[in-house]
Length: 386
Image (tube, rainbow, N blue to C red; front, side, top):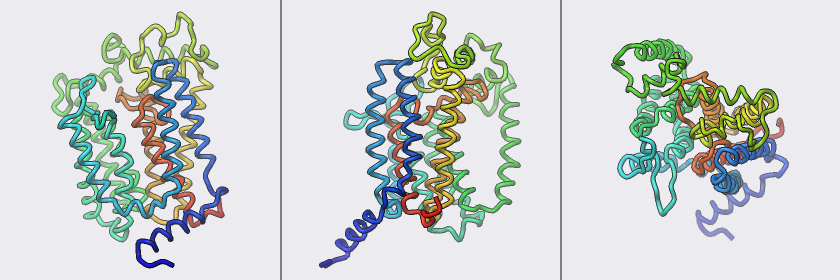
């Protein structure tokens, strides 16, 4: 017999767990993620064999965490949304105070002997925070004052990430936040207003980069934009990586040079691509698996993002919609950024390819996010329509 509120709550959680049916588990999404991760493990083995076992460990940890989170009621967890926001700020601030500096940027901290990147956690924590915060005040979403409050709350972690410096992740988180606000149903007038400001802003940034001494860009940012616009002028400096990446992808032709190829003409084996296990992992895929392999990776990323958006449309509440859509924006846009850099379509930003690039923090965080999406799917009010 239940004698107190705590026991009653535990019983309620157990009953909800029993209500989950195995047939309602989105195995399609899980399989897509695993397939993409396997390609990543193989590509990392070619790029930096010593990191392959670590990536496999990250995959196992990510899958375990995903399954555990997928069976945990997300509506209960997001009640601690202010705690998520606070811990996010603390972790990001800790990076600036006693973080580890690598390659001119301070983005990692070490706790209990474990090195991780808080900005990767930040994406998931902010999605969970906004899911509850926006749902709690959903009747105010169309108010301009509420949007300003949301942007003000987001400004703190964004500025901390930018300070590391990590412009690419700052842009990534900004896109996620904007996507969430759009899904939440903000006024269309605000959307039009943002676009009317954003597009001219991009033009101004590019124009500024063309000036001899840019008043708004740091020197390395200006160099990256100029190298993107005029790669031939920076072929031995800033555009060196990108040009070699394009060459490697093109050399793979239709079917690639083969997995872990020993071909002497390989751009990867020649040591012309640095960070090939992370930022330029798509280069490895293009060279070794060719056009077919590249298309498979793009298709898997697209299908995963689309599945997240589909789940978002059938969520039982606005919080579930925001969580699933937030992951869709995260995976889809970050994949677009990474591949855009590797193919020279976008300026060099330095951001990992979801599920593929080397890095325990990135892999475990994205799988944790998928775990939340799976739970949103399990609790969907329209489960029978899938």
